[in-house]
Length: 163
Length: 289
Ligand SMILES: Cc1cc2nc3c(=O)[nH]c(=O)nc-3n(C[C@H](O)[C@H](O)[C@H](O)COP(=O)(O)OP(=O)(O)OC[C@H]3O[C@@H](n4cnc5c(N)ncnc54)[C@H](O)[C@@H]3O)c2cc1C
Image 1 (tube, rainbow over the protein chains, first blue to last red):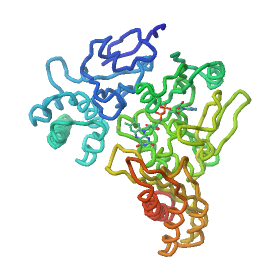
Image 2 (tube, rainbow over the protein chains, first blue to last red):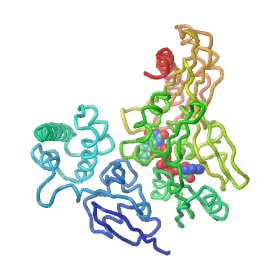
Image 3 (cartoon, rainbow over the protein chains, first blue to last red):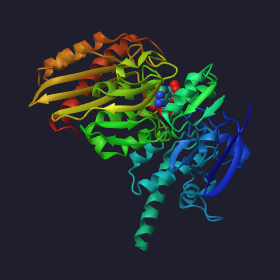
Image 4 (cartoon, rainbow over the protein chains, first blue to last red):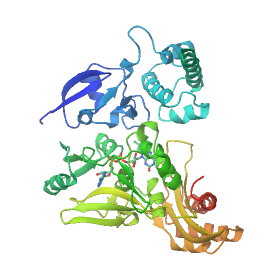
């Protein structure tokens, strides 16, 4: 079967790859581009472990074809930290022990970062609904929600200091 | 599988007309790719319609209605204050589809053309009196949304026909809509029963009512008896009682893991009453609240 040539951007870097028409963007990221942060959990859009952003929108990369990335902007967990310096969300997740096995964590961080960019001051209910498509079987969610609320508060006070 | 990205609907239907085997259009892919990955449906031809001009637009028409492009996502609808102001029930129905991740991809047209009897946006579209523009080799026709599904997973569209837009009528003064569904949890589940209602009032009296039930029959049900039960009333207790009876009587459901026939029949009546109250309140408030 002939492969499709795709030119796209991943975490701001121009990227080219060849993929099978049936290949998902998740498989392309993991197997062709070596970006293994996004995980395959269910493979049917229910669990959110493969969450990435596509043109800034939170999506499940298991339900996007690699070919669909042509000309789009892809954002993954690998683009969240600034070099060695963790993103505040990553720092707070460690501080609050908001992860155990870690499989769901990349997806949750990508989804949460998008939420805080859209809504810097979410209520706990808003955070819980936003993350309803990210399943975690370890934490019972409370620690995740606390880490998100705490990060949001820290980012708000920082942006106040700056202005 | 051949993957195509036509730049026009004309090219899309040419590809579909020539294709052999199984053909699917790709909007958000939240049904197509799930079915592909589960080896339920493996298309030989996949036609991605997202590169066609205008498909991402939500446009106000000259008569005050709306044209929603076939690639517009649920998230984009929710973020559109004027559309949500005119048709809160429709926008909320689409917003119920899946999680944040699914909202970033799922479309009204995909929800309709997938043909699920439990599709959340479909009762709301039918209640609103929406239609779709369908383009085929012989030109474009406008089809009422309720005439698209013909059974679970089946539609009245021919293989070389594509939906080019969803048309939502203008919100008239004194109108209001609502959609509710019952699911066993608060998020991320498929409707056991869904109910979309659109009302028009003259003063406090209902003059028009479209009551639509989902997930209780092989296709969505637009039920005249339900509408008649409340037209001419102020949605008083007796009218609500008649509405619940009519809604339960209209049901022709199945028993499955999500609910029994008896449960679905009872819940249809309860949901119709609740949705009617919300639509009525919105109509009194002038459209949206
Ligand atoms: C985790 C998850 C949760 C979900 N939750 C819900 C839910 O709560 N409620 C609900 O109703 N659904 C739900 N769904 C199903 C799905 O998300 C919706 O049906 C969605 O609206 C489909 O839209 P799409 O754009 O992704 O369609 P696609 O998958 O792209 O297409 C679906 C069908 O429509 C056809 N089609 C698409 N565009 C056109 C066109 N322009 N012309 C003709 N045919 C076309 C395709 O050929 C295909 O058969 C869920 C799915 C997932 C994965």
